[in-house]
Image (cartoon, rainbow, N blue to C red; front, side, top):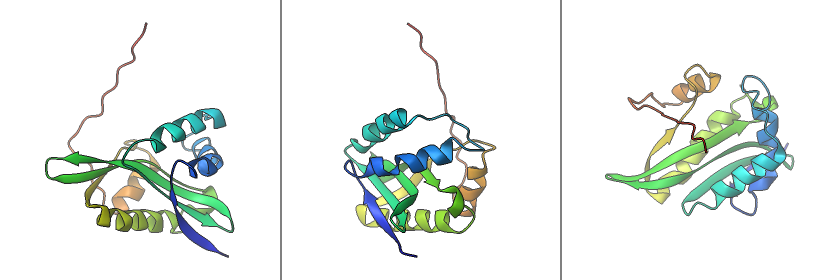
Length: 148
């Protein structure tokens, strides 16, 4: 079995679309993504000036991804992890933990001092992130639907 990490950019991000759809259209998420919507989402994110993505490939097929962008803050640069997913066959096998550790190691030389992310309060992903050292902050996520 051959596996390796690849840096994801505007030219390679769409190769991870099927992986994203298969993960987030399955339980527990059951989101209902179309490939067209994922392509729009990925292309939009990959155009951010400070976009950084990391993917994992096994036997020529994408099986994990993590991406986001950095932002200058008062005390240094922070990274916003926008998306991370692992193919179902790689979940609970250590691939996600290795991916996030590799992402963090690749962010360090870029001067990134902190990683932020959002996940559901009761989502299984929360326990994964906590296991890897992430802690809940005293922040509030807010949203408002705007109508014409």
